[in-house]
Length: 294
Image (tube, rainbow, N blue to C red):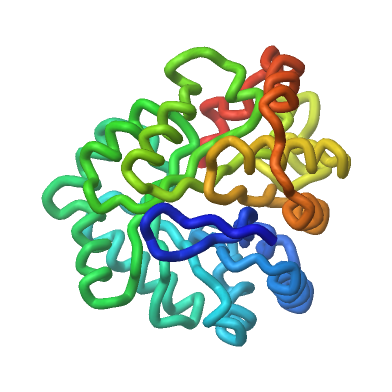
């Protein structure tokens, strides 16, 4: 599988990152098999979070068996120093590891959160302390929403090394500031910041719970995913050719093998194909609506 430099971290990430949220819906044996499958296909960048049910616990056994082969990303939704410090210690414990390669501020949504995170006694102080102590190697940020706020975060946080945000043809086709991830990609490129794409496989928001109760959804994703191999490949190619370092799989375990196949076969997507996909999908409902923030 192709690899690309993850900004200036010194790590080359595979073009697919394993979103370990998929492990949450599997029993331990199934989780072990999935990690083996992902590693067999060459994936070297894993991403997990404490909010992903028991994904951290399910990842731990194989993480430790293959620790040298895995560049591990984890995150926290805590915004203040004490909370972030505690949550990091808890993640290390649950993952049974003494260090995390990439620790990320999870799901930045609001201006006031950025103020808190970057301010005195903010989460960043805990991150920087952990970095000095060697518990974490790199600092990142994830956001499901406002690209303008991501740009502001780049200004505010001078030791930011990676960003994670939505990238798909529906979002790329919306010409407004709320969807201008193009500007984020450009800026990240200028600053040497690695970029990780989420929601590459989002078709759109789920129908309302009246129309489709949550229990009846065929997939465990936050959004309705594309699920045919050809569509998955097209979506992977689109995201991977957009300037991102790496693309994260959809969260449902049933989709992981197809996404691995697409990632293994990836060999670019030309501008014409990208444009026609945007044109075809630009009027779909954005898969990044407010209710998807989690």
